[in-house]
Amino acid sequence: MTLTLWISLGFLVIASFLPKSFNSRFIFGGSGWIFLAIYWSGQLGGYIGLKDYVNIILVIAAAFASLFIAHVTFQGKDNIDKGGYEVFISLSRAASISGLIYFLFAEVELLNTWIISTVAEQGTWLIGKFDIPVTNVAWNQLAVNGLVVEIILACTAIESIALFSGIISSATGATAARKFQAFMISVPVVYLLNIIRVSFTASAYGLSWFGTPDESFHISEHFITKAGSLLALMLISYLVLKLLPEVADMIDGVLKMMRTEFHRLMLRLS
Image (cartoon, rainbow, N blue to C red; front, side, top):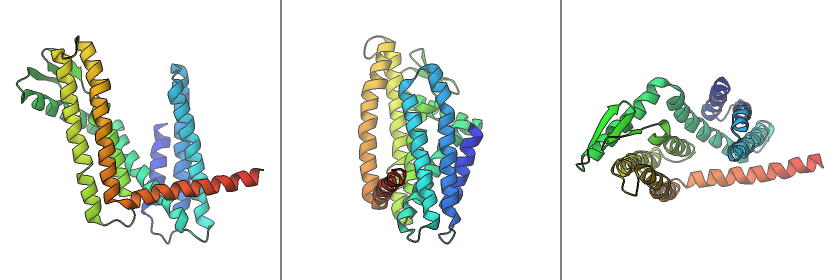
């Protein structure tokens, strides 16, 4: 299914960067969303096998949402008033940039190894600054007080970095200066906060700050740092939207067009 994903992202990228005079943008965009729906559908079997009902529901919802977005995007090609449908080109740009960044780091071994090893090294450096016994025992592992913590891709904040990068790129009409400001208050800040999060969790685990090592890891990772991350992401999102109101306009436009097209579809089926 990886090939399906790359085809989807390829179509979405083409749709995002073709000039406005090319009506085929909407064909490429709609095709990209169809392949994305196929990709999500292909993930269903794995979650069914694991009996992961939450992700089963999420994957089904993502597949149907992608199909409906494809349907609406296709309408833009033959519609006289294309202004309303332009938001789906912006949405395609956000999805393509976010997807490319994330899946390049997820699927390309060189990039995957680089970002994980960088987080491990920088986490080790930060913990050491507080005179806590820590060593970088492997490219993806650090040990605090002799207890090893493994760094995986989810520990690098690449999901949030990809998401903010995609959102910022979708701000059609925003100046380069405002986009750069939005980037600087989101992506570098998210990365820095993530290094602090990894360092705190590893230290709590290695030094048993909240009970046993396992209890300390659970409390620090699933309660303290998760709550902090949520608050930080909410604040960063607010600041990005203040700098780039075009993003809020795009989201509002997408929701309005989807409601309109849904009502039209229901009338045709009734």
